[in-house]
View 1: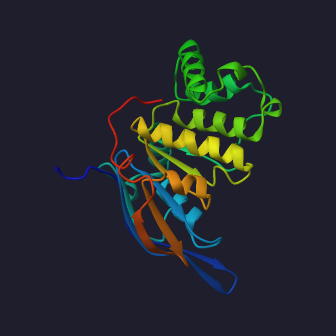
View 2 (view 1 turned 45 degrees about the vertical axis):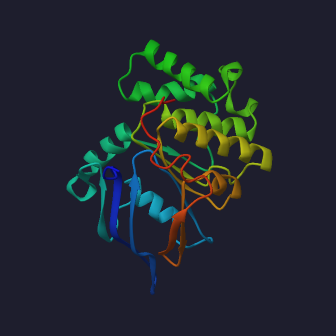
View 3 (view 1 turned 30 degrees about the vertical axis):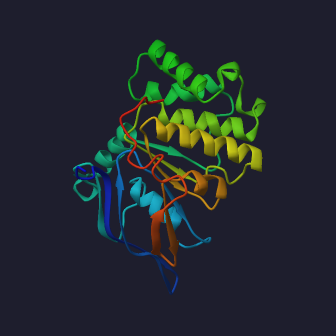
Length: 245
């Protein structure tokens, strides 16, 4: 077998917050590597550092020490503008609370970030239509968020995150506000996106996502406890190179 193609590497990440007289070590020396085409789920109890780690990997927060490298680009070499450009062009992010603009339709919510990236309006709308159809919302293109269920809103958010064809998609508790049916549908969607070759890092304690992961990384007190294969390992790990949504 050939060498593993590491898309993202993190080395000895530390993140310290000072809260009055209290010093919080949110990350206490985390190292990991994520292969291209992998579906990694990060799990652990509330307050263990999962979201802090995700924010550092996404370049939305700087570590107190350590390094993150995406492809061959170390984050520490980038200015704030450079890091913003990297997030804009190479990463997609799915938030727990959707963050959709309530006055825009599903189609407009997905197309707008593409316009900000300089896409032609017609091309942006066509790409938005394409990805919304792929996430099962072809009949809901012109509905506003208030007219959609929670699961449908999250699928719009996922479509928005993948529309510009990023190298890596990160998600923070994407099923945290959904009922079991909605969570299962979103978990199935992530698995399908991964099978088409996209790399995913998802923070979640939801069994529906854990069951579909290629690898599960468990955290506690800012440290990695384990990073074993998930139940879906072999089906999705390293399964890049296919169709991309």
